[in-house]
Structure formats: structure tokens, C-alpha cells
Length: 326
Image (cartoon, helix red, strand yellow):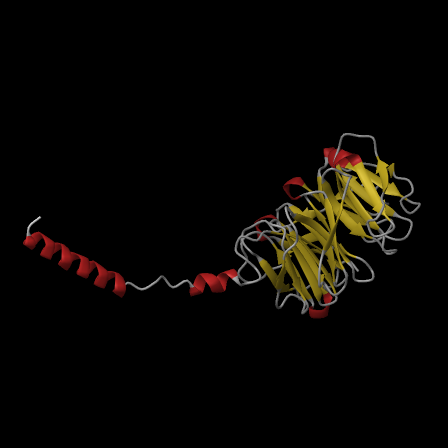
């Protein structure tokens, strides 16, 4: 290379260094700020439960979001993985319990300061969790199994219905009477505090129950495919269809201000008015499946949860209208 070539190379090198020196590093502050938010856009809220102003939300990715002010602000709590929280309930003493797809039961005391896990041997897939008035834990799911713990998960009593079906809901309405529903229109009841379970009646047309809510030993509602809602007033011996004005499948049933409410597909939020389920209008509704909901009585609000980090408190001013169930 001649001297002119070396000169050209030197000039090019100097220009490259100067250009590099003028290039600014990318601004990642917005990304860092987003990562620090307690609720992430990838969160899918699958379970919600409230006790006073304390609220917990379980996510598909295993994190638990907790609030001490009724859902106004949130703190993110990580739990050991792999985990996916699919259901949650609260005991009379304020203890939260949750089921995990990965065969665990999580629990936290009323302060929601930390979560601890215990293995769940059965059912293989837990689909429903409930804490009754005596503080006993109930879990139901695959293999037609219902299990109960009287000692906060240290030991379990198993009821095997001896059928090839899934139990999707379980609830004790008082110390003696309880209901569980499952595939193929199955309804089983206990009248002795869960010592024994027996079939009673059946849901119509091989009904697959998504959610159930019983308010007494005689009255309850069950939701199913294609937006079906059925109602019993004789403890499950017979069922009558009710009109669902939203027309959407309803995935969670719960009480708010003494009135049955539900959430479901397409962002649907509904409440029972008379004998019909009517839509609760709320601002900026998103057409996504709502898998979780809870009542925060202290603020007279409904908490709803779904995919895309959807976790919102909405007002329902119509829950005490005449004709609503009490």
C-alpha cells in the first residue's frame, strides 16, 4: 500500500471513531420502568379472592399480586416455580388458599406477607378449591376426587366417586351441607359435613359446569357451555334454565352485596336481576375472557381479572335493585 493509501485509512479510522463517539446509547429507562410495575402485560389473572381490603390475584405464570387497599395498588410476590395459580379462596380467619396446576396448595395468612406451598397428591389435576366455615380445606378435580383437609393441608381425607369424570366445583354452604358438580351433569351432595357424598338429581343434557354458587342447602346456580345458566330451589333435585342476557359463557360465580354475579367470555360481567342475568356496564370494557372475579365489599366494587395484565376494580351501582337475590 502506498502512502496515499495509509493516509486514506487513517482518515477513515478517525471518522469511524468520531462517528462512534457521537452515537448515544439506547434509552432503556422506559423498559426498566415497565419491568418494575407489579402487574405485567404478560400476566393472565386466573384467580381472585378478597378479605376485607386484602386482595390476592393468582396468575398463570405463578406470581401472586396482593393489595392492601381493595385493589387500588398492588405488590408483586413471586412464588417458587413452576407454578400456575388456577383457583383461590379465603377462610373465615382471613387465611388465603390457592391451588396450583403443578399439584400444590399455596397458603398465606391474613397479612398476605408470604406464601408457602404444600404438595397435593390428589387429585392429579385440581380444578376447584374452597375453605368452609370451619376452616377446612376442600379440593376437587380429575379422577372424580374430592379431598378435605382438617389441619391446613398436613393430611387429607379422600372421597373417590368411582367414575371417570372431572369435578369442577365444590362448596360447603354450612357445617353439614355441601355440593359438588362435574362432567356429564353430575351433582353430588353431602349432608353430614363431607363424611359421605351421594348423587342427587342431575344437570340437564350432560351439562358441563364451569362455575357454581349455592346460597343455601336448597338454592343455587350453575353455569355451563354456550352461556347456559340453571337454577335449583330444591337442593339439586331439579334445575330450571335462566336467561343470560350477555349470551356469553360465564366462568366465575360469586356474591356481591348479597346478589349473585358472574364474569365470563368477551369481557362479560353480569348480575342476577329477578330471574335473568343482565349485563353490568363498565367503562373501557375489553372483549377478553374474564377468568377471575371477587367482591370488595369495603369499596362496593367488583374486581375482575383476565389476560394481558387485566386487573380492574369496577363499580356496580345496581346490585341492590329490587328483584335481586338477597
